[in-house]
Amino acid sequence: MKKHIILVATFFLVVSGRAGFATELIYTPVNPSFGGNPLNGNYLLNNASAQNSKRDPKADKSPYSESSSLDRFTDTLESRLLSQLLTDVGDGNNGTLITDDFIVNIIDVDGTLTITITDAVTGEISEIVVVGLDPAN
Image 1: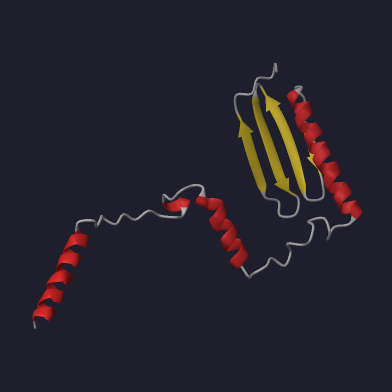
Image 2 (image 1 turned 90 degrees about the horizontal axis):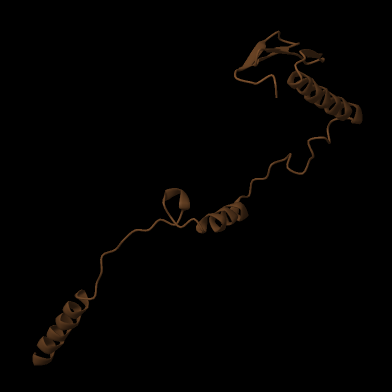
């Protein structure tokens, strides 16, 4: 019986002695979106990407793979003409660009640039007005 009491007393002494070393638990998030260390972001993203089993069916295709050379040339030409039109407006000229898909009309009146874009198919009109441009520049 004495052995049993000594064993129980020793157990309580050991347990109560360890309680003095215990500290408060503090939660620190891992994800930087929730306040964690920003250096964890790349690691977490790579792990998530490695576990992702779903693949985009169009990921291997180039955006130009489905269009012909003529379509790509037309897109490039339209982009170049639109860029030239905006350059001409900077010189004080107005202009219009008409394509199969849209009509762009650019007018500069005393530093107020008005760009009207009309969808040739639906007839929908979008207007962008930029105020405060200096025509002298």
